[in-house]
Image (cartoon, rainbow, N blue to C red; front, side):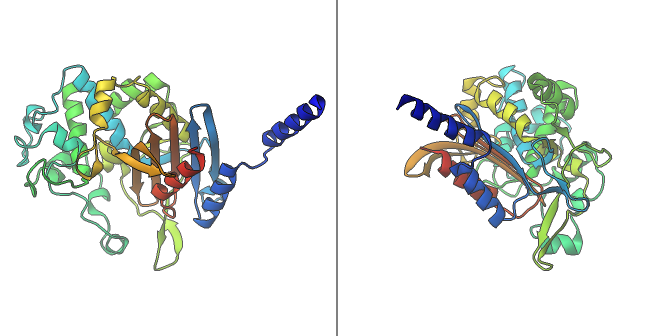
Length: 358
C-alpha cells in the first residue's frame, strides 16, 4: 500500500505544480471575470505567497497585458507612506503630534495654523475645507478637475488650496481630505530640509530595495506603468482617464508601485522594521470613522463568524485603484492593484479573505 500512497501523493503534487486550480484560484478567476477586473493580485499568508496573478490589459490600445511586474498608480496608499515618514520623525524627536501646523510651517497662513495639530492632519479631523470639490464623474466631464489639470508647485498647493478657513472644529469631525496630507508633506520637507521624494527614497524605498516604486510626474515616462481607464455610465464603456498632473496629489496620492514592492513595504511595516511597536500602536488606534493614521482600522471585523483586527489602505484616482488589506496577527496580506475603475476592491479583498481564513 505504501508505494501506492506515495504515487498518489506525487500525482497530487504534480497536479498543483502544473496548474491544477485551487479553490482560491477558481474563486478569483470567477470574480475577476464577473467584475471585469484588470490588474494584479497578490495574497500572502504565514507560509509565504499563496497566490499572485495578473488579469487584463495594461494598455488597451496596443493590447499590452498586465503582468506581475506591471507598475500601477497606487493613489492613496501614498498616504500610508506619508504617515510612516511622520511617525519616523516622531521617533527621532523631531516632531510632536500634539503641536500645531505653525510650529513647523511658521509662514502658513491658514486659519488652522495655531489650532490644527499634526494628529488632526493624520486622522483627517483637521476641520480644513475639503479641496476635492468635484464629487461626480458628470461634474468632472462638464467642468474638468481644476485642482489637478494645471501644473502646480507644492508651495502653490499649500498656499492656494490648503490655507482656507476652517469649516469644522479641529478634532470633532472626520472629513477625508487630501489637503491634510499635502500639509504633512510640506512639514516633512521643512523638518528634513529635503524634498518629500528624497525622504521617501532614503527612508523607505532604498532601505527596503523597492526598485519599482516612486513618485509620478506628468513629464516622466515610467517603464511598465499601466495606463488607467474609468467606466463612463453614459457611454457604457471604459475610456482613458481625464488628463491631469498626477504630481498635484503629492504626499496624498502621487506614487506608483508593484504588488511585490508593496509586499516588501507591508512586511517591513507590520514586522517593525520601519517603525517601533509603540508607533504602530498609535497608528493603528482607530478614531472617528475607524480611521487611524493613514489607514482604516477595524477592531471587530467579522470574517466567517470569526473576529479579526483589520488594517486597510485603499486608494482610487479615476481608473487607478489599489488596496492593501492586512489581518493583524494572522500574517495575511492581500494586495490588489488595478488600472480600471470597474471593481470594488473593498469587496474583493473581503471575499478573498473569506477563501483563505480557516
